[in-house]
Image 1: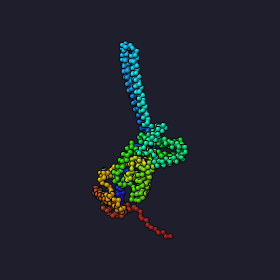
Image 2: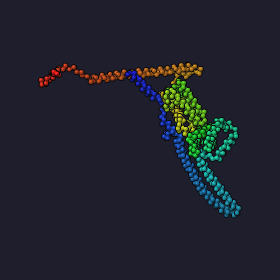
Image 3: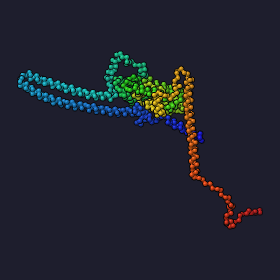
Image 4: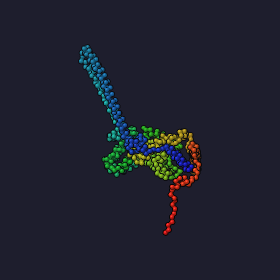
Length: 552
């Protein structure tokens, strides 16, 4: 009984410890769009999916446009009122000046009656009136131009650039680019790269299978690229909005106008994205107008500061001592690092997907059972901490801005990408409570004063043989097992003491009850006489029956 109680207590404490240490748990509903549409959300879109985020963005944008239009109209009315008031003042002054000139002319006419002086004074007055009318017309024309410029600027700011550009503007932009290309500039290379040429040939060969729709698709893509090249001064958010609008319009045309089957629409959109983003990559990936590079450096610095985090702190269900699991971990780190070398958002998503699948395989081999979502996210966080991928935030922002939105809202690509965003957000906000550490230990680890790992196992030179490293690693494991064994023995002794105290307490309570309520034991009764000895009416009973014998 004592052994069973001990095992039960230890199992319960172990379960409680496991539940306390599992600080990383994300419900699957938290990965979905907070508007409840059923698609995957994204922290970059404030928890919305791509579709709902664009709707919210358009609402805010229309509201801003309306407010700007009202502001422009109010400024124009104020300017017109100010001009009208100034004109009335100038008119009154002009009228007074005219009366003065007329009186002076009449006096001169009385003194000098020559026709020459009379007409000279009149011509001067007429010249002044003509000059005043010219000034008034120029001022009115300038104000009209200012109002037109304000409205035109607002239209250019809030209207997608690829809708504003006319064929004449596109042609002018191409001529300008040709002229700039003639001038030698070492910083800007106008020649297409080998990868760009290869993608172009593949895109053209792909569109040949679509016949007439393929030609229209190619024209639309060329027009969009020319427009984007002509509108380099747009912000990255506006360029992203233009790309998303273009994806949506082309997909709708493929389905409605050209009657392309859904499976071909998805392939066509993948090729369109590849063709466009291969050319736009150097302009829209980590542009200088954003703080993406600053965020990259902050995340890299944060990950380097968290180099001491162990799989046990994150409750990672992966045993890297197993060779197959170790290979899976290396492949996952390689895939997440390789994401930065890709130029197309879909290819970057493919790297994230391959990394995630390697993680699931590592968990499956370790646990001998399929991995769950609660196991996947901590392992993904561990892979990101161990790999420290370059330009992580820039890659996430690039995928968010220019990937085909249908890939981010549904499917395994969208699921894995959403988990990666959650992992990065967790790393940025990771604290002592998340790792089940005290704040004092967490601060010491972050400042580098101490490390949870053994110094002997961290200070090996590259020339040390693997056997020595394995020996020290085994020693570390034995020390950990020794600590666990001591902890178990101490807990078992404590439990034994608790049981002894419990037994003594029960015995005392029983004794107190016995003393309070004593048990009276009566002596044995005397032997009873015959049953009928006290029966006074024995004489009235009939005689007992006697056996009778009958002769046959």
